[in-house]
Structure formats: structure tokens, C-alpha cells
Length: 231
Image (tube, rainbow, N blue to C red; front, side):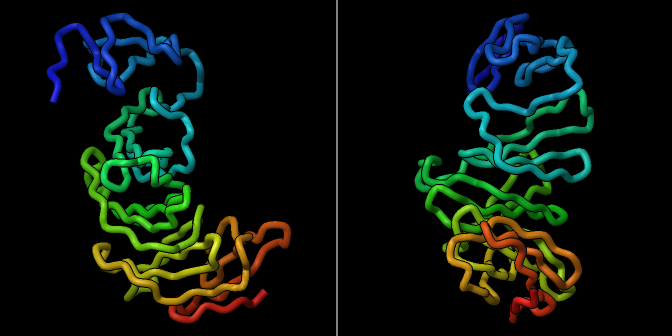
């Protein structure tokens, strides 16, 4: 742990003196009277606010829930307080990896159901992760399930008795029961699409799956234990 000295800022692991500018965004300054861990953006006159990290800028996907925003980055998950849209505040950077090596896991697509966050990974580690984000400043992660397909797009669907994650990736379409986030299990899968599945959108009991260079496949998802293509 570090003690931040009076009149200074500690932002993204680097120290700055009062009035010092963000090297990558000069209009943002260290203003300890406002915050010692976030840039003061009051001097920025752009109507757009960019949520960035000084370490990475390759954000992949984003979801919002009330006053909070969650985004995937190459090394993990970031959470922000966006209650004041003109001054978003980073709450946590959650690093994900095997034995401390975050380079092995690259979070990609993301979805949110109440306080449960789900995301798939790329980089050769085809996993589905769930996170408890009830406290966005202290997110908690569950053990993942393997082999969901690289770069999988995912969506939650509530079937009443079952909360399910649908995932489309490089090895087909899968449904996973996530009633107990600590014990995820696969319910069904539908293959035959090689490595061409890109994204998924849900409408009622149908899933519309984008198939690269082919078009859209329509999947009947009324029974998560038995998927079938209908169009």
C-alpha cells in the first residue's frame, strides 16, 4: 500500500504534482483538492469524455447499469461511476490471469444481468467468466468454465427457473446454466458452423446469430437444453 502525499496525485500507478497534466490528455490535470486518484477534467471542453487507462487503451466492449459502467480491456475489467457524465470516476481495475500473468487472458464481449457480469475471453483462452459487481469498487470473480469458443459473444436470458448465458464463438452456440455462479455448467450446444460465428442478438425465444460471410442464422432457444436452427 502507498500513502499519497498531500498536494500530489497517484493515478494509474504514477505520481503527479498539483497542476501537472495527463501526458496523454493535456486538458486533464492533477488536482488533489478534487481527487488524488483521478484526473480533473473540468478544463476539457470536448463534449465527449473518454474513459481510458494510461496503461492500455484497447477497450473491447461496454455495459452500463444505473450509475455504473463496466468495460473489458486486454488485462481485465474496469468499473466507473458515471453518475456525473461530465466527470466519470474510475472505481476499480480488476486484473485477470493465470498465476498473475494477465497476458494469458483477454476479456472481450460482456453482458450484465442485475449484479452479475459475464464476459468471454480471447487470446487462445476460451473461457466464460462471471463476476459479482454488486459493489463496483470491489468486484469479485468466480472460477471460469473452459472451451466456450474464442472471442465469444454472450447474452444473458432469464428462463424463469434458470438464468442462462448463451455464447457464440469459434466452436458453436452454447447455453450455460448460471443459477449458481460458482458452479456453471453447460446445458446444450449447437455446432456445424466452423469458426464463423461473430455475434448474437436475442428476441423472445429466438437468437439471431451473425455468421461470417454467410448471413444470419435464426436459432430457436425456447428450450435451453435443446437448441435448433429454424432459419
